[in-house]
Length: 340
Ligand code: ASP
Image (cartoon, rainbow, N blue to C red; front, side, top):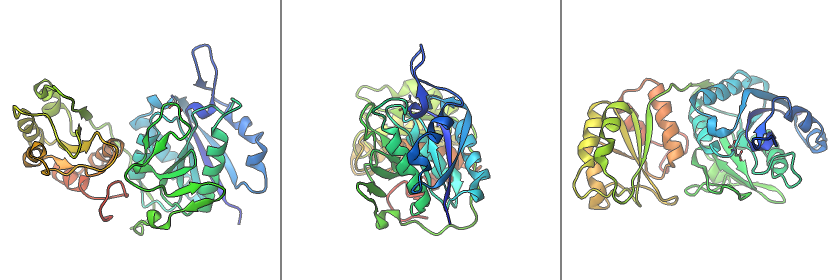
């Protein structure tokens, strides 16, 4: 039976047109453009429908409300399609991929995010290949999870990172192998695709506007300056540390803040500024105090995934202790360790 794919257009470079203020998305523009592409209507292409989100956005403006709208748009069409392609700006695509990975529970169909660095209206656009291959991947159904296809690589959505502002291979997943490589053929890595069986029907877990912060440490950081926000305002904190989880803290200013934040119901997750490898709290004395004060190791999770996961867990109404425990578990393949 012919496969049917839903293409959700959220905005982003792929469908943008030049305007006096620079590239911007234009409502109603992409549908006729795609319909006129013979590759998308030929016998090899799956059937597809285009759903345009309103408003269309540069992805720098995509946040919780839009994640919920995208999740809802997929969820309400879930039974009518074999898979989904989400056209999205590249700037925050990795965050949205992470958010959807958690938000769409028990997913059993592919949700492939893609976009382009050069708009479709330009001769050298990378959007054509990204879109066509994403459609095929969504129709093939092998990667039944939230993933991100870009520049020949299919990545697990909650492992992806944008690494280039102008390269056509703009994404990578430094701590997890690509799920598939698209060369002459689309070659899947069956071991990388392995995921636990769903525990029930697909469900949507929308996010709330949880106060979350990301703090990147740097030489000379004065932790005291961040005390009011860390201990009183935030519920989820991602601390981007050096190397395997180390912080510059000769004066020992940070652990009391972490302790206070934890007592006030905030969960601090330690991630690394390095792309490869991950956090091992306690490997060095410089990190041991973080765990002792109540922080949880983010392991090899990306900051993008850690942010999305904090939104997800707090939005489910879990208390800080449960959020902390789950941050240390592998829920969607977002961190190394066995899947729970
Ligand atoms: N600023 C654009 C966006 O993220 C960049 C892109 O799509 O490549 O929406």
